[in-house]
Image (cartoon, rainbow, N blue to C red; front, side, top):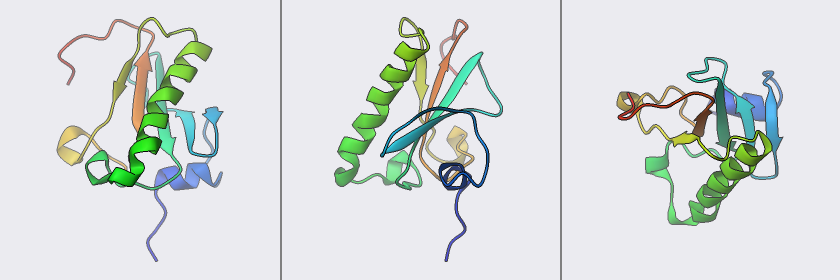
Length: 114
């Protein structure tokens, strides 16, 4: 049996996190190493190692994550300016093998990123 990912442990509540939103499909938590004043992680409860491994059957879940980003942005009153980031693989900065969406806001975000 494989070891649970950090995010599965957060979902299971065996590791504490500051939860901003949760529903049956995902959880939104504050990043412990924020890269902006607001840095949230939108994590699906279904384990998909990375977005590049998502399947056609995951389409509704992936769309749901973006709509949750919108809802959380509205809740935090940042809907006028935020960035969503999904890393795919270690070269792109992925550190946890459980797909998630970063929501960044609260300061001007330059382009190009990284």
